[in-house]
Structures are given as structure tokens and as C-alpha cells.
Image 1: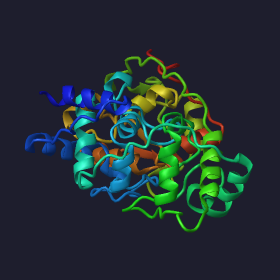
Image 2: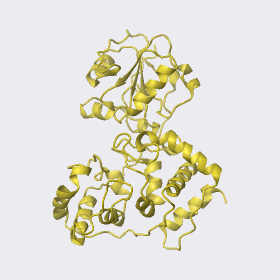
Image 3: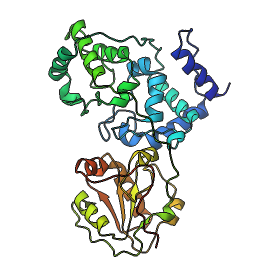
Length: 357
């Protein structure tokens, strides 16, 4: 049976009340391919050995309890569709990512095997009843220092992320609160909080959820051959800081002045679909084929990269460009998250305003 077929049957059995199907075991070639995919797509943020927090507070993926309670649905959802509102983009090709469902399934199995292939815990999906107001107090006293005062994340996961909450059942949250996540800094609160308090925190987190937004239909992004913005404009005169970094205010000013440049969005392309700086073209951080750069101008046109880390992915692409002989490169210091927070505009799923003259 092909891996994809086996995983589809597994996913359906996980969602149904039927007896669970055996979890497929990866053959050596599939395991090697999944390991390579992990290094290509995941290691930049989650760490080369799944330790987490390499960039952008991405969580550890070593935890057995995560694989026990999140496999297969929640792990697959996070990889395939990402976490809107965070730097974690969706990797499924159907929404503009680089991976097929079979490749994502293979990676999901590999992560479970790397965590020791723990047996699944079927926690169910029943709602947890609790006092939301009381839970807010317990959260502030016990959780905010790692997960952020408003659940925005910090050294811990962003627990108020609507996309995460929209696909995460209450028992999954409740289990993590009580038992923690081995292999991570998240310790269980059993013995420190009462069962009622843990129910209250779960109810508080659930109160932050909204319905999952419909994903925009992906469009074909422009190619690198179309990357030059304002080709007839003058070259930008950047005000550099810390070497090759530029500030959002500086980039915004030069874009409004219609200066000639290339703007590269180095995130997974599904994030470009959701929102990007006007004129940007995707060149994801995992690009390692120098031949793809042949379409970029080599006439000294400035190339600016950005990401949401706020700089890790953009720095990676910047180094790759420099290694390939592109001397005039810069990185947006604040990243697109800072760009948005400072009030600068973005567009979705298409490129507006590219001067083709």
C-alpha cells in the first residue's frame, strides 16, 4: 500500500470512532527523504535536531506527548496550513507551499518516529467546561511569562492564535496544561493547579478562538524574471544600519519614490499569498538552486530580502545571493511583521503597481 493511501486511512480512522489503524512505518528511503525535507524546510526555525527556538520561538518537535496527542490530525494541519498570524506558513502545495500531501504525511511520520514512535492517546473532542474569567487570572499568574500576556507567544507557543485554536480540541489543550511537553521547557501543572483551575485556563484559551478564516484562492506569483520594480527609476540610496540592514521607513520612502529595485519575499510562498509588500516576488529561504537566480538582474540593481522571523530567512537568502555574486543586497531589519506593525501597507495574492515600462 502506498504511503499516501495508508495515511489517508489512518487520518480517517483517527477522526472516527472506529478502531485505529496501524500507523505505517517509514522505509529507509522514505525516512531519508523526510529527514532531508525537515532540514530544508523546518530546521531554520525548529532547529537541526528538532530542539526548537532556533529562530522566532519555534517550538521543539522532540516531545513524545506532542506526538501522542497531536498525531496525526493536528501535526498535519500545522504543517499543511500553517499558523496564520505567526511566521509559520502553510507548506501544502494546494495553498502555494512546496510540499505535496504525501510529502507532508511522510514528514509527519518521520517526526513521530524521531520522538520514539509513542502510542497515540485518543483524547476525544469534548468541550471542557470552566470559568473564563477565573481562567484569565490563572493564565496571567502561571502562563503569561512564557506564552505572552495576551497569548501572543514568547519562549512558549502563541496560545491565543485563532487558527491554532480553531483546529485544536479542548482535551489537547487540557492534557498539555496538566502533563506538560517532555523535551521542552513546558512543565505540567499537575500538583500545582487544581483540576478546576486547569479547566478554567482551558476555557479561557477556548474563548480566544474564532472560526477559521477561509484561505484565499492561491494565484500564480510573478517569476523572478518579472522581479524588477520601477525598471526606469533611479537606484535607491539606502541608509544602512548594522552592515546590510535597512529600516522599514527607509524602504517605504524609496518605494514611494519609485526607485528601481528587486524585493524578495523569502517566506514559504503560501505566506506571500496571504499578504506581502507590494511589488515583492517569492524566493523562499529553502531555495538552493543557483540556476533559479539566472533571471535576476546582474547590473547592480539592489535586491532587498525580507521575512517574518524577523530576519533569519531573509539573512539566509541574502547570504546565498552574495555567494552567487550579487553584491548589492540588503535585508529589511523589522521584517514584514514589523512593517505591518508600523502601519506600512501590504497586498494579498497579486502584485500591484509593478511598472513594466
